[in-house]
Structure formats: C-alpha cells, structure tokens
Image 1 (cartoon, rainbow, N blue to C red):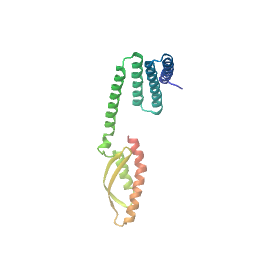
Image 2 (cartoon, one colour):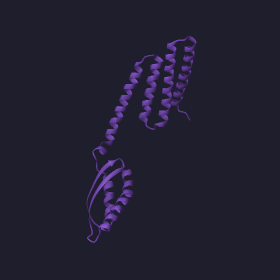
Image 3 (cartoon, rainbow, N blue to C red):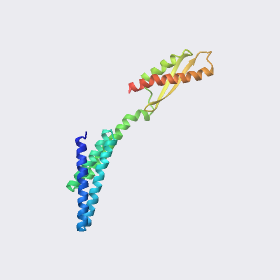
Image 4 (cartoon, one colour):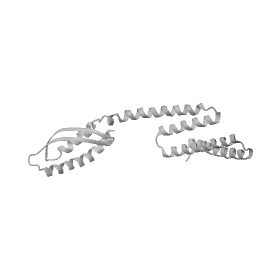
Length: 192
C-alpha cells in the first residue's frame, strides 16, 4: 500500500518527468537554450524525487525521513514559486536536524566514550557465575568497562582453592567467560 507521502512524491516525479519532456520538445521546436536549461532543471528535480523515494525505502529512521521531506519541500517550493531562498532554508533546517542528531548521539554514547562501568545487574551476574565455581574460594573485585554498545571488558580478581592447577585455572577462565556471556548477555539487554 502506498502512503499519502509516497503518492505526493510519485505525483511530483511524474509531473517533473512530463515537464522535462515538454521543455525539451519546446527547446527542439524553438531552438531556445533557456528551454534546454529548464528541461535540465526538470530532469534534476525528477532525480531528486527518485532519490527521495530511494532514501525513504532504505531508511527506517525518522530523522532521515524528516530530512528527505525537508529537502523535497524546499526544492519543490523553490521550483514552484521561483523563490530560491526555500532551498537555502531547507539546507539550514537539515543542518539543524543534523545538529540535533549529533547532540542526541553524544548524549546516548557518552557512557561508551568515557568507559562507563557495566550495570549493577551485569556485575552481579558475573559475580554469581564466578561464585558458582567450586574451585573459586572468593571473588575479590570485579572491574568492568564498556568497550562498545554490547561489549564489556571484565577484570576479575578471585582467590582459587590451593589445590587448583594452572590448567584448571585456564579451564575455569573459559567456563566463567562463557557462562557470564550467556547469563549477562540477557541481563545486559534487559537492563538497557
């Protein structure tokens, strides 16, 4: 089903394409270089509508769609009225939209940029996993730092039983890592 915004874009696309054909025919008949220029302008507008449709199809983000709509409105108003300031106003509005996106992204990713610790639920899950190993006598300290949206660096300080070998420690390291990934992955996603 085609939405009303898509219908508007398709209508503008067809109108600009027909306008381009008409202007090129008039240019051939009259020999007018100005009419050739107008025909090229209509072809460019037709290309803008195609890009707008492509952008809407490829984008699920509202900011991108908003930007494309602003471009469409600015170019269309400029073309319909002949007042070229609409294009500049649309450019300024897109700049404002982009600045808003940058501010939002900075706020959302600040914790990742400064290396924020994992949530208490995730740390608690890691601690419980380590404590569940009978070879680990005591969990001393857990330090965590986000390295990415879904990646947490963990520094785990534990005391092993005296009879645990180096090979057992390596095996336990992998065991705690795998169990923590399974347990805390779901904790991490539910805490977001």
